[in-house]
Image 1 (cartoon, helix red, strand yellow):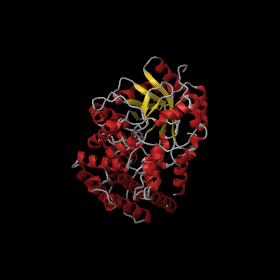
Image 2: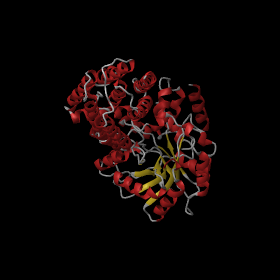
Image 3: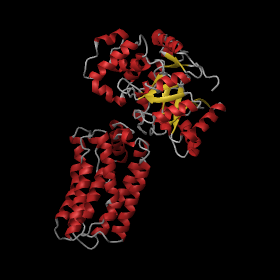
Image 4: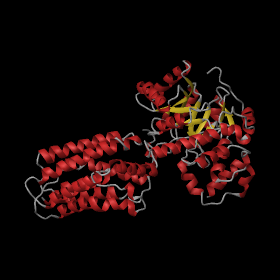
Length: 221
Length: 310
C-alpha cells in the first residue's frame, strides 16, 4: 500500500455505527435463548477458577473453546462477515484459538489453577468478572439499546477479555493463548475508535492490563 | 478511442449552462415537469448523464438486515424518481453490491440505471471472476462502467476491461483513486490509456485535482466522477453549525450540502458527483442541488474563501 501514511482508521471502516450495533440486535434476537446458556457457561468457568481441583483447568478450557467456536461461527462468519469481508479471516483466527484452548487446556492439561493467591491471579479473575458482568452493561450505559447488548460467549469483545483473564488466573502464563486475544483487542479497539464509540478504550486497556500482569507474573515466578 | 469527443471548454460550459432534458422513465418524473436534473455529456460518447449520482460506500453496506435493505431500496427509488441514473459501488464495500441488487429487483430494474462498479483484486488474473460475481450481485446483464479500484493491479485489469468494452460487454472503462492519493500515476494512465472515466475526490476543501487532473481530463476528453464530496459527512459536520452565507441564495442554495454540490458540479471538467446517503430527503436534495443556477468563477472563489475561514 503506497502512501500508507495518508490513511486514517476511518478509511478502513466499511460500515456505519448504526449498522454495526444493529447487527448485535438482530443477532441477539435470532439466537435467543442462547444468551442464558452463555451466562451459565461464564458462571461455570468462574466457579472453576475460584475452586481449585484436578480437572477444573481442562473443563474451563473446554467450555471457553466452545464459546470461541460459537462466536467464530454464529457471529463472525454468519453475521459480521456480511458487512466486513475481513470477518471470515477473523472467524478462522477465532476457530484457531478454540483449537489452542482444547490442545493446551482441555487435552494438554497445561492450564491449571491453584489456590495460592497472587496479584496476577486476582487481575485474571477481575478481568473475567468484568467481562461477564460489567462489560455487557457498558453499551446500554453509554446510550445503546439493551437489545444490542454484547455478552460473554456470544459476542467477541467480552469473550476476549474473559480469555485474557484465564491465563493470568492460571498457575503459569500460557502466552500462546494470549496472542489472538491481544490481536483482537487492537482490531476491535481500532474499529470502535474509528466509529467514535465512547467505549473504544476498553479493549486496548484490557490488553495493556493483561500484558502487564502476565509479564509481572512471569518475573515473579 | 478514436471516436472520443474532444469537447472544447466552451462546449462544456454551454452544456453546464443548460440543464438538458433526460429521457423520462420514472412515473414520478413524468408527473413532475421541473424534475429534470442537470446532465453532463460523457466526453467519450456524448451520452447525457445526470450530474448527481449515488454512492454506496458505507451507506449501503447493511448486510442481511431486511429493514435496512428496504430503506436503501427506498433511497434508490427516490433517486430514480428525481431523475438520477448513476449508482456506484465496489466489491470492497461489503454487502453494498447485494443491497443494490436487492433494491433494483424491488424497483423492477429501472431502465434508466447507469451501473458503475469496480474491480478490486490482485492478481489481475482473478479480475474476470470478481467482475462476474459483482454482476450477479447487481443482477444486471452488464455494467455500464467498470473502474479499476484505487489503481490496484491496473496494468492487468485495464486490458481485461478494454477487451470487455470491445466485445460490447461493457460500455465504459475507468480508474479510481481517493483523497488525493497516487495522482502522479493517475496522470500517467490518463495520458497513456484509452479510458473513459476517472474517479477522484474533490470538494471545497480538497482541491488538489484542480491543478492538473481536472484540466488533463478536459484535454483528453475523459469523464470525471467525484467521490467523497463531503468527506463522508465530516465536512458537513464541521460547518453545519455555521449559518449559510446569505449570498448562497444567489445560486439557489438553501443548505450547505447544496452549496457544496453546486460548487463541485460547476467545475467544467466534472461529469458526475456521487454523494452517498441513507436518507430519502437527502438523496432528493442532492439531485435537486444540481438544478438551477451554478456558481461562476467568482462565486466559486467566494465559496472556497468562506469555507476555508470557518
